[in-house]
Amino acid sequence: MLILYDEEPWGRIREGNIERNLAGVSPSREFRVEGKYEGVHRDRQIKIAVQLFEVMGVEQRDAERRMEPGGRRGL
Image 1 (tube, rainbow, N blue to C red):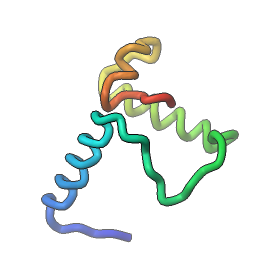
Image 2 (cartoon, one colour):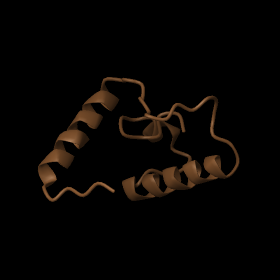
Image 3 (cartoon, rainbow, N blue to C red):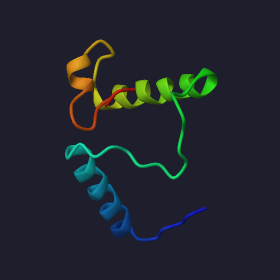
């Protein structure tokens, strides 16, 4: 478990992630995944994406908005 008592490190991480996403840098994961998620893992991925878009105010059928920076990006 990682506990940070200072918001500043999170801000640096968040800003770095935003810059990388807007620059089109492919995600880099510590755990490499071969292929696509399947089964329960894919279901969880979709549920999380739906929740995210609801919070962002993006309709499910709005493919254009989902592809905007910070949006779906291929989920």
